[in-house]
Length: 118
Image (cartoon, rainbow, N blue to C red; front, side):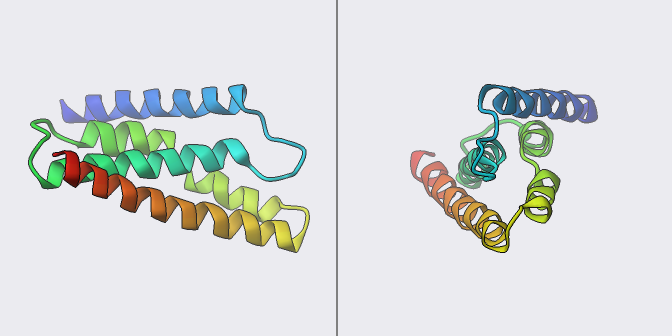
């Protein structure tokens, strides 16, 4: 039964990511703002959920949320394609580095919040 919940979470996450890209289309700058935002918010949410789980606050299985919803929401592959298709070397570097640094910081902050709140 858990696989059904994971699949439903993945579908919800993928649809949510799609909605973000519809609401916030890429700007002419070439920087993938929607996908960067999705990945940073996903890292924050995952860190928060793991933090809550570490202190025993969540009485439910995390897989439908983490592997399912957040796995469907965030997208490593789109980020990699954005890096590869960037028009200049400097933009390619910015697209590679900025989301990675912000994503790590967001995950760490989410973990901190989750363990603090729980």
